[in-house]
Image (cartoon, rainbow, N blue to C red; front, side, top):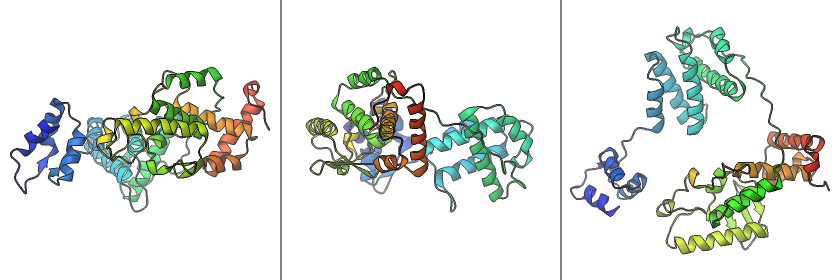
Length: 346
C-alpha cells in the first residue's frame, strides 16, 4: 500500500485530482485492494472515481445484440429501477439485474420487433409460455414493470401486459432438518466467527445478510439482549458464549480497528465497511447451510407452538403474510409424512 501511495503522490500537485482509472492497474499489479486505496485518497479529498457503474458495463454487454431503440429504452428503465423515481423506490442491484436479464431475454426472442410499441400481448404470452416456475414469475414481473414504465413515459400507446397475471407458484413446504445434518454443520464451524454465524442462524433465525450487517451497538451483553434487523431478542447462554469467544478473538486479532461492525475480516478491519458476503461461513456442501438452519429454526418454533402466526410474528418480527406462511408450513408438517420427526407439542 505504501509503494502504491508513493507512486501516486510523488508527482501530485494541488488542486489536481487523481483518477481511479489511472491507478487501478497499478493496484492490481501490486496485489493491493483498490477500494482501500480509494478510501485513503477520498479521505485526502484528491480522488476522482471515474469508474463506470457496474450496471452500466453489464447492461452494455448484454444489450450489444439488440437494436438501438431497445438498448436505449431498456437502459433507461434499468436505471430507473436502480435509482428510483418520484413514485417508486430504488431496487437493489441483484433485483435490477434479475429483472433486466429477464427483459433482455424477452426482447431477444422478438427479433421482428424493433421497438417497445411494436410488442403485442400475444408476443408476451408466447414468450412466457416457454418459461416455468420462478423464471416465468420473474419474467412476468419484469415485463409488467418495463411496459408500465414505458406507458408512463409515453413510449407505448397501450400496455400489452395490462391485467396479465403471473403463474401461481405455491410456496415450498420445508421439512425439518435431520439431527445429523445439524450436527454436521455445527462440526464444520471450527473458528470463532464460524461458530457465531451458526449460532445466530440456528438460534435466532438470522439471515446471512443480517449477520454481516450486525453492529457492536446491537449487542447488550449486560442486559442480555441482541438486536437483529431492528428486532430485539433475549440473549441465551449459548449465543452469549459464542459472542464472547468472537469478541475476545476480534480484540486480540485487530485491537486498533475502528470498524463498527460485529464481524470484521483482514480486509474490512482497515475500513468501516462490513465484511463481504462471501466471507460469511460457507456451508454449501452440507444440507444444513446457514439459510437452511434459519428456516429450520423458524419451523421448529412454529411446530412447537402449534403453528400460531401471532407468536411467530412476535418472536421473529414477521409481517402478517410471512407469519401465516410459516404457520401453514408447520401445519403441513404436523399432519404430513414428517410428523414422526417433530418435537412434542406442549
